[in-house]
Length: 233
Image 1 (cartoon, rainbow, N blue to C red):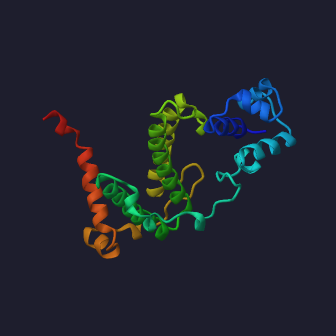
Image 2: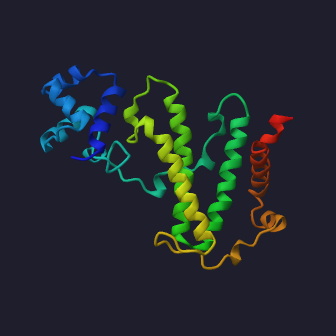
Image 3: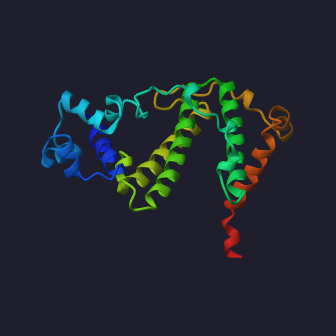
């Protein structure tokens, strides 16, 4: 089958709080065989793939890891919600999460606008993946804080994800630095001309009137957080 199938069928069962014994009975197979499927020790046939997809109400493509949508739909840009259209009241309580969310989102708008002007797909992809891994790490830390949450939610094991994600971010950052400096790396196309990256306080305020204040505040907050010397005073 593939590496995703065992993890996903285990996740679906634990999410629904169904014991392996009960699931095996419902699927008309032995518990031992279901255990083999969930551990990836045995591969199932097409008939069982369809049966377990119907049992959990998901698509076969989802079970096989071909799509992250449980209905089997292929995600497009137009399917994604626009964070700027969301109601900020979804974040209850302190205004700090709302403020930080806006600072980050608005600053990312500037970064991706600059990347669009550069028209370098390799550099854009590397910066995007770096940011995705950073979000993944924070979400996983929060998810893992509750030991009752199923580890099957992720394909990378709990004991490995910290090292793997840190190493990946380090490698990707090295690629980004090389590409931005105009050096080819790993067969990727380097930035040919950095002329469009000429910036000043005035030009940022002029070109990004809606987002400039957010970026300046994010820079100030980030550098304040990096000033560890205050801990020694």
